[in-house]
Image (cartoon, rainbow, N blue to C red; front, side, top):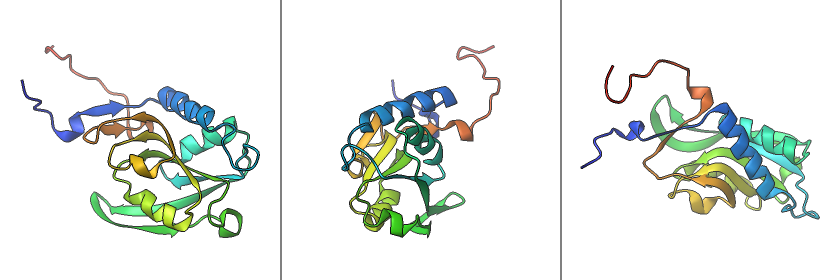
Length: 167
């Protein structure tokens, strides 16, 4: 039997509870791994998807310095070359030494390529990783196949779903 689903139908639905558990698991993996006696000097969230997991990681690891980097690689649904549209405080992050960069997902790795160029010594951590971008990430929690579409809680609403075998 062949799989007749469309690419977006091979979905991995992540609830707020699951995201919280997975982000905490990421924090546990990062605990004590920073270059300054195991400590991290700052967390930089890749907006927008990295903001929720970065907040959870910063809380769990008691990191008070949190900033963001915004990378735009889509114009509506058309993908373009990624470009940084908002940088973190470069006086703080420098080359990235001691900085933990957090995102929800690495897919192809194109977004991270731009971030790594800006902060080459930062530690890159994502909650989820797909094979094409996994080599750009230092730490992650869960790997999903490249053709899986992850539905994050901020993109979903509760609604009725028909039973698999009809009504």
